[in-house]
Image (tube, rainbow, N blue to C red; front, side, top):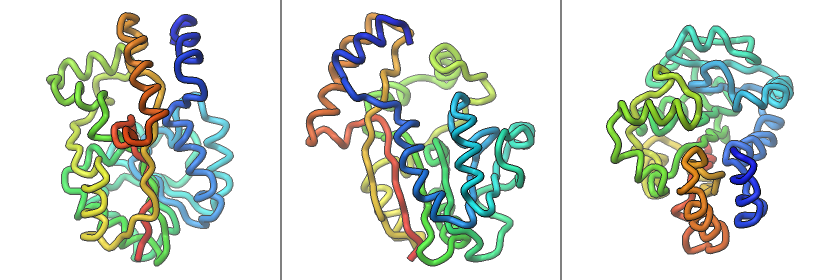
Length: 242
């Protein structure tokens, strides 16, 4: 973010946090309460790249942590989790009731069959265990724009805006990315909704300066008007195994 964008953000949206920062804040208490944690689709980290030290402390809090992903080259480079497994969420290689906590950070939007896949997560959770995930809100303006773009343009923008390589951009389905969808899928998969939180985030279009001021003006409204909460950037959701 440029210095100008930063000043505009502080002026127009005081107190605005990056949604990943909010997710980290919500994750901490759940990790502290868990003795067995499964980090799903964690690739080479659980938190953003610049939060390596904080991530190491989180992992150290849990008694036992396993990271799973379908991308072997990525997960073998994981910076904090010692126990790693090449696995697909549709068929996890663990016994029933193996974990107190399952997490997924920016993963759920990629699930093709979330009812079945949430059911598999429910299977490996202990009764009362928590599935905590952070995912884009399908009703946000960012996703509305993204869904209009072809995959090639998405990969280009992911590189320009986030520094992500083309092979780090996966197909998205957004089948569990709204409150109604989550409620329905949770019931079908043996989970209950403990909390659904709509979270604002920092501007997405800071690399395109003409868009920053109107974007920040809209984010300001999302922050201040409860009636617009359902249009915020992301969702942080806690589902409980019944």
